[in-house]
Every structure is written in C-alpha cells, then in structure tokens.
Image (cartoon, rainbow, N blue to C red):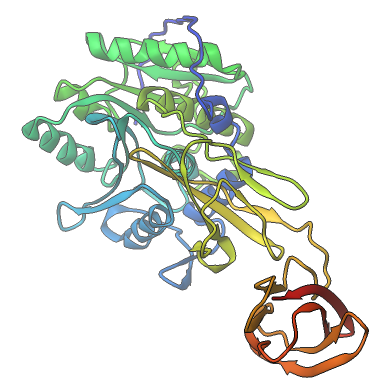
Length: 453
C-alpha cells in the first residue's frame, strides 16, 4: 500500500449526541488491554485457542489463513445481536462479515472494515491493527440497539488486488444495497514521531466528502488528542477503493503516511507489536467507535446496572427484564423478571432488557457483598409462612443441614436431616401457633420464626 501526500486539515464543531446510555459511555468501554491482547494473538506474538486447540497465528497470507479466519468467526460468535456470514468467494478468498441489524431502518447500512490477510509473518500494523479495532468496536456496539444496520467486515486478499472487498462491493452494487458510509481501517497503530497525527483519505465525491465531514465532527466533539490530515485525492491502495468505484461513500483512516510517519517495517516480518504506539492505537479505535455509534443511531436504551450491598437494579425503567447467571452461560434465573434483583449468593449477574424491538444485555456485574457464611437468609428459604400442611426448606445446591423444630415454649418437636435442595417437612400434625425452625450446617446455625395456621 502506498499513499499520496497532498494534505488539507479540516476542523468542524458539532455537538456530540447523547442518549440513555451515551456514546461517550460506550467510548469509555474501549479497553487498551483488550486491544493489546487481541493484536498480539492475531499477529502471532502470543498463542491463542481456536476451535478448542492451542494455535499461533504467525502468518495470514490468503492461501493459508483459515486459522486466522476461524479466529475471527470465533470472536464474532461470542457477541450478541450479530449474524455472521463466512463468505467463501473463491478458492483462496474468505471474507468474514458480521451484521448487526438496525431496529428502525434496517436497509440503511454503515460498514466498518479492515483487511485481515498479510504478506509475511506477524504484520502487526498491516493489518492486525485494523482487524483488532473492528473486533473491539463490534464487542462494544453489539451490546446496543441502533436505528441503522452496522456491518463489521474483515476482508481477505487485500494484498492481492483488493479481491475480497471487490467481491463484496460489486455484489452490493448489483443488489442495490443502501450503503450510506464505509469506514476502512488499514495500518492505524504506528506513530513514530508521537504527534498523534492520522490521515483521512477521501475523494472528491459529494457523499464521501460529507462522510469525511461527519468524521471530523465526531473528532471535534470527542476530546481525543488526535490530529486529522485530510488527503484529497486519497490513496486507492486499500479496500475503500472498490466502494468508491461503485459509487458508495467511503473514507480511509490510518496512520500519517501524508507526513511520512508510517511503520518502517511495512510489508516485512519485522512489522511487530513492539513497534506500535498502543495509546495512539486505542485513541483512534475510540474515535472510530464514536463515529460508527453516531451514524448507526444509538437507541435510548440504558443497559447499565446499579449495585448496592444487597440489590442489583437495571438503570432502564419501563422495560421488561430477565436476570441472568453469568457463571452459568447467562442462564435465565427463574422468576427474576423485575427491574431489581436481590441475589441469594455471590456471583456474576447480568440483565436482559427488552424495550420495544430492542433487546440488550448488560455487562456481567460481580456481586460479592453477601456474607461468606453458608447459612444466611439470602441463601436459605423457608416457606410458606404462615404454613398449613407442608413446610418447604430450600437450601443452596449441594448443602445438607440438620433441622430442629422447637415450639414457643422451647420444646423440641422434631429433628431431621435435610439432604436435598428442596425439602418438604409435614406440618399438618402440629397445633396452630408459633414455632422456630433451627438449621445447622458446617458449624453454622440459623433460625426462622414460623406461624402454623
């Protein structure tokens, strides 16, 4: 990839959009630690797990990069609100495309994309960087609902005449797809002089110029320490080119080739993570996320959770709720469908919020404020109270206890072992009045006052 060096700088100021859960909130979720982990795995610096097996993704040349493609499918498969198209378009070509369907205008499409193939081993900047950024944006935005459709596209064979993006863009034109904007990321993590400059490549096509202006508007409102160099006409040497050729609005964002500040190890096996500026990389990722969330049209649903010492509460009011057990593959917790949830044990919990056609799942929240005692009135349930014929004692899974029933006069009426999660104790033979159910397990005791009617 080579890039011409004509430069213009634009700075437009527009207000940043805010919602129930704001774009700023989402930008703040970008994790530099996650970016470092993923780019190291995808460029072969660290071993990872793909299809259940330990692998090292050392080389991603398109004739032999199926492990890399499988890694991308695995990453997208872990997300909500995503449909994956594993697009085998030729003997060697395999695009990985994830679609997040818009709730209001599903035919309005915005694409964030990067190529994942390489020309040699490692190739961290070119283009494990762009690929990693797309995955991070998808990780965060897939938890939200949007008016418009967002497509996260990772192209193969960019290094072979842009064949992957050409196949897709040509088909989109033939299908009449309503693509409103394409953001292509290619080589976005090297800043050798530390000036935080980056390039926006664009051509003098009205819709692409407008897209560039929108990007600059988001930058102006973001507070990020980044400086944009607008390059017109932009380089044709990356995957945005075929969208330009088919009349779709597109821009290309990457490190500052216009100032000759590109990785010195371009297209070699010396293109390694150690050369990259991770603060710079994280900030450009944050900017691209803000741009995609703005154009996607973030819906006003807040999936955050507030926690007190005893209770988890969904921030969004007026919706439907289902609390989930994150320690058990997000299994729904029976009967926990209120806005607030009082956990009976420490653990990791999330809430699924349904508001109209929008379904969002919160981040898992670590709830660890309960006593470490085995027996407490959060983990043990004794009911009904008042009782008539059968008293039920519900214990934590795997726990056994010794039960003693004592009347109001202190006389012991029953001793029994409880060895099930749900235990039933006959009560019809006891007189009406007040009783105490005493439970002992692992040298701990707890008492419940019960009324017999």
